[in-house]
Image (cartoon, rainbow, N blue to C red; front, side):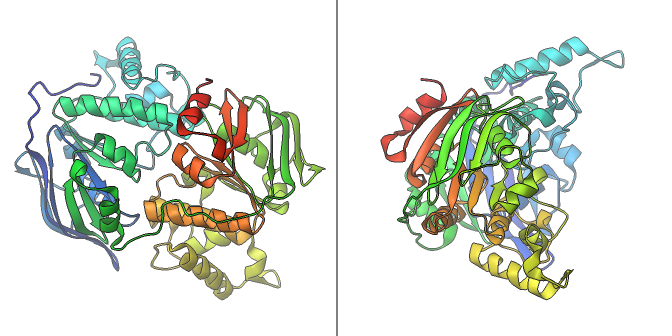
Length: 505
């Protein structure tokens, strides 16, 4: 047990082949005549915009769904598609973008779920704990408490648990779907070390990421999907990022971090030594109208916890919150919405969206008055409002009434952002708004943020991706151990200084 590696020397040979695979969901052609191969001892990136077909393809790899046409070959044998158990036994491990964990079980129980060591029919508790601890140590996260329930962990820590579980056994192919989307740079470096170890041992790593700069560091070959088809492929070191982006979108795009001039006005919201039950410890800062205030920090520093306390989801222990100069410390989400404050949670799956409801319902849920007449919702008006936002945000959905659960992760994120736009919030708390979003959609989100700031809106922008904080924000504060340690204009920071400040330097 543990992170077991193949005993053979790594060789550059195809371990997994995709042969003319097509897949359709209703009227949507998710994949069309896709052919490519993945080699042992290689990191191969699958790139493309949200909805390009990447997630559908890897679901076929893992046995979660079957192709309509074509076939897969694994180690020279035709794969019986649609059989997750076969894929798992063959050594295909999958880490989905949307985490698949048992929230009420502990870290230890999640890591070994379905692979518990036993002795005489009983779980070997000593071996169980040892294997879980070793898995976390290999990810350089021994600080995670094995007995902690997963539901109490941050999204980033939950992702570490998911990765640790996927690395158990003897994986021959590991598929990582946006594995670093919630990780800080320090944790990303730890993950890259694991990827290098897997590669050296001959494991084929299929890497899906919207962070092209990361791909430059660890990827050998890449394949770009666009509209369900292969749009390009090549060696990462021989291809510029500009060329890859053009393959992804089929056209030139404007600058990655669009700038929009805006004026900063009076304080809109102010935190004075704000503390929660567990975190934050003592946060003092102010955000002005027309200002994009960035918040950097490592996982566990208290960034998301501050957002929850500020929005009224968690109880204020001490300190004060002033909204436009008026004390509004002890509040609730309903009151915050009434005050024009909106929150985009980092956990869109459980807190940001109603996955079983439609795009239209999710977009309009916090402000139904525009869709109602005499207290009754006018569905035609609700549809019109939703379609306007779908068009403005370029959400890929076949209908305003399509269930949100059927959209790609990036399009779900746009729906969550669209809800705040529809609510016309004047103070927006955006917790990792670009997580799992393709480069074109990221650029669009940055532009929207700039437009909102130009309109006098206040934006609290929490992000683990330091380049976007430096490029987009007016001011950046760094959280360290539950406090905002340093606040400076974005122009006064460098990436190295920011990273150092997140570690208390």
